[in-house]
Image (cartoon, rainbow, N blue to C red; front, top):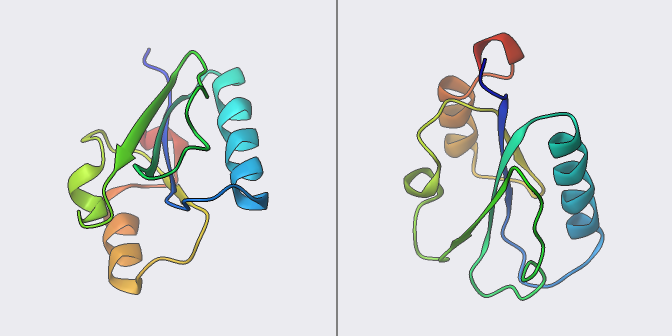
Length: 102
C-alpha cells in the first residue's frame, strides 16, 4: 500500500503566520504517514533547512504556471493564499479530496 500524498503550495517570500501554519501542516501530515510535496517560492529563504522524512521541497519560479510544477500523482492540493478561480476549478477536477482515491 502506498502512502497518501498531499501537495501544499506556499509561494510567500517572507515568513509569517501562514508559513508557521504550513510547517505545522507538513509536520502533522508526515507524522500521520503522508508524503508531502511543498511548492515554495525559489526566492524564499524561510524554507532552507526545513526537512522532514516524507517531505519534498519544490522551489518554483514566479513566472512558471503552478500546474506545470505539480507532481503527476493525483493528490489533494492545499494552498495558503487565494488562488485564481480557473486554477481552483482545474485542481478540483484533477486532484480529489477523497482520501480513498489518493
